[in-house]
Image (cartoon, rainbow, N blue to C red; front, side):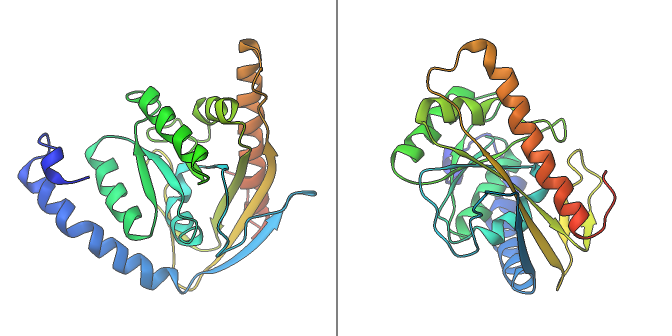
Length: 231
């Protein structure tokens, strides 16, 4: 999205938008090539492997995994839901340099527009991505958006977590992970979540809890893969 479409951004912010995405892309491209991805999955789950181009599916992961996910799925041409904030604009520009696209919206503002945009993404045969607890948390608690999108489109929800063996952990609400160079990264897949088109309203929350549990299983299995304690 061009700066002229965002008059609310200040001049310093516009300068950041012009410079920072290119720097982050270059750094992540170089460091990401040193990462080694190792895939695990729950019984009966067929994971999506590096380099594969998925179809009309919905992917969910925790917000802290954004960096390794950006590298791992860079060939997917997926579309991600990103907030309309300045930070969202910054992330959008970085992701587009990796071949992703974005629908702007969030769980709080622009939610309806975001859901409609991702519906069109699924209908076009592409993959839609949610950072399930983003953009502001609380950590490890998925929003209802993926469930609503799955009900409308009939697309299955793929659930995974990417855990670096060695990483810097930011002091942010999501404990954002910055994998260190040459580290191994566990790509942990849990059972896919299916949502019926005629699911009654009272089953939405139990289905959200089911999705949340699958995300947490994926995360805890990834931690155990490296012998890390649950946190």
